[in-house]
Amino acid sequence: MENFTRPAALKDKTLPGLRGKAAAFVEHSKFVKFIAYLILFNAVVLGVQASKFSSEDFDTFITIVDYIVITIFCIEIGLKIFAYRLHFWRDGWNIFDFVIVAVSLIPSSGTLSVLRTFRVLRLLRLISVVPQMRRVINALLSAIPGMASVFAVILVLLYVAAVLVTQIFGEHPDEMMQELFGTLGHSLFTVFQLMTLEDWPNDVAKPTMEFFPWSWLFFIPFIVVASFMVLNLFIGVIVDALNVIQADDMEDENKKLKREIRELRKEIISLHELIRAHFPESPKPKKRSTAKTKK
Image (cartoon, rainbow, N blue to C red; front, side, top):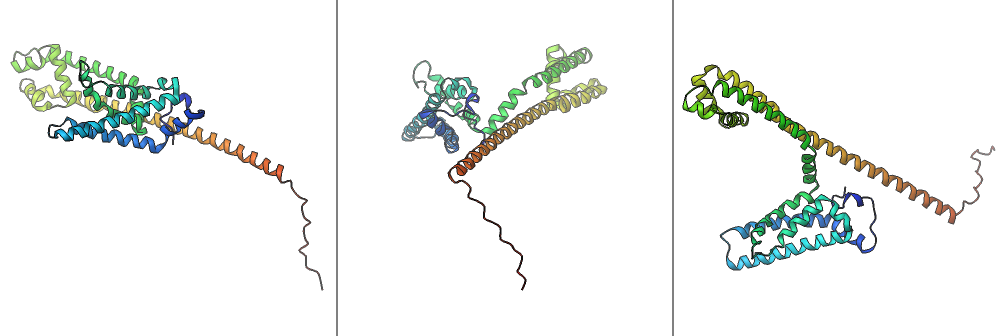
C-alpha cells in the first residue's frame, strides 16, 4: 500500500535511528487507522459538547476527553516533525494538519476564544488520513484549470442570454417583466435561475409566456445547453482528473513493485553466491547405466 503520510521527498529513503522508528510508528497502518477513528470520535465529542442537553458533569467529562484527544494529535504532529524535519513543512497535507491542531490549542478565554469554535475543523483531518479522500481533493485541485475554462464558458453564455432577454422581454412595462428582465442585473439572476432549474416554470417561464407565448423557444434551448450540457462538463472534467490521478497512482505502484522485484533478485543472487562460496560443488557422481544385463 502506498504511504500517504510520508512527504514525497522521503518516499524511497530510509531514515536513521530514532527518526526511522518514529516515522515507522506514525506511518504504520494501524496507527493511521487509530487516528482516523479518533478524528471521528472527536467529531462526536464536539457535537455533544455543542448541544444544550448535556449536564455539567458530562461537560467536564467531555472536556477531559477533548484534552486527551488533542494531546494525542500533538504527539502525532511532534513525531512527524521529529522524523521528517524540514521535509514536514514541504508537504501541504502536513501543514494542513498542523494548522488544524494549532487552532485547537488556542485558549478558551480571551480575545482569541472565538477561534476555538473552529475545533470542529479537526474532522477535516480525515481528508489527509484517508487516501481515497486525498485522491478526490487532489483531483479537484488538478481539475481547477479545466473547471476555470468551463466556468468562463458559462459566464459568456449567461451574459449573452441576459443581454438578449433584457432587450426582448425587459421592454415590456409589466411589473413582473421588469422584476425579471428590467435590468441587466435582474436578467443575469433570472437566467442563472433558469440554469439551476430552481422552480423556473412557475417563477420565470409561465409569467413570461403570458406576454410572450413564443418565449419557450428561448427557455428550452437555453436550459438544454446551460444545464444539461455545459454544467455536465464540470463533472466530466472532475472525472477525467480522477482518472489521471488513479493512473498516476497505479504507475507509482508498478514502479515500486518493479523496484522491489529488482531488489529481491539481487538478494537472491547474493544469497546464491554466498551458498556457493561456503558449500562448493562436489564432483558429480557417475550416472549408472539403466540398461538391463542380458541373461
